[in-house]
Length: 60
Image (cartoon, rainbow, N blue to C red; front, side, top):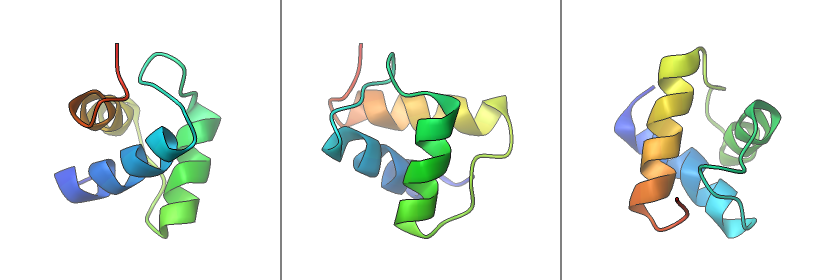
């Protein structure tokens, strides 16, 4: 997962009021589907999404 796809996924999550603490695996999958990108493949991808979510202000 690239930084851009992680950001796109995080942006969808933030739009729906989710944070890096509250976004679940299912939320990330749905956000990636909504953004039209591949779902996160592993924990590294999910960590990258959480970091992007923190960076755009949806975080801890």
